[in-house]
Image (cartoon, rainbow, N blue to C red; front, side, top):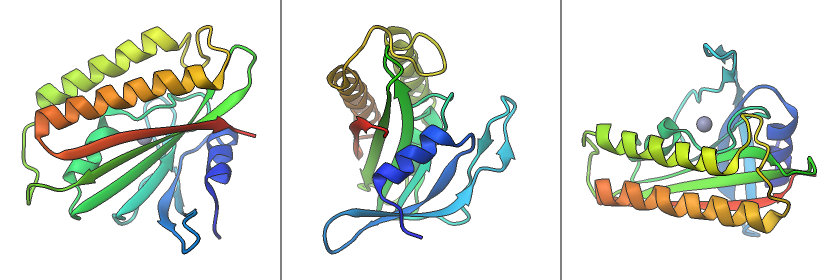
Length: 190
Ligand SMILES: [Zn+2]
């Protein structure tokens, strides 16, 4: 079954488990999503995470409602370690404004390989990324449910997420000298 980006956003909003799979651009230049797996591995926090049975050039996963709506450090580093020359990874999350209106936030991580193999130590980079995400969390979120602090409008969410996306890609690019970008799109979930 084929899904569009809105459908995947609604899965992130409405289902307690992660969904994952791959996406392609069709001839009309719209993106088609194919779900290949659903989260069944339970973490310590009780969250069921999704694992892909194989690696795709363009893959995605959802962060369910009541989990953080932005990429984890592990999510961010994953495209660098990929075996293909090119890797796109999308993460779909849900965030609420002060009126409890929900928005889908889609993060697109893209990496086009410069080095043949990525073997660099990323300890310092991981530390910096963790700091950056923590700062974002403190500035924007009132609690883990993803309720935005005082932001009413889509443009506020968009602005803050874009700033984070820029900072994250800069950190990764500076540390690795790799061709890496983070892009973000925001739309009302329903
Ligand atoms: Zn994730």
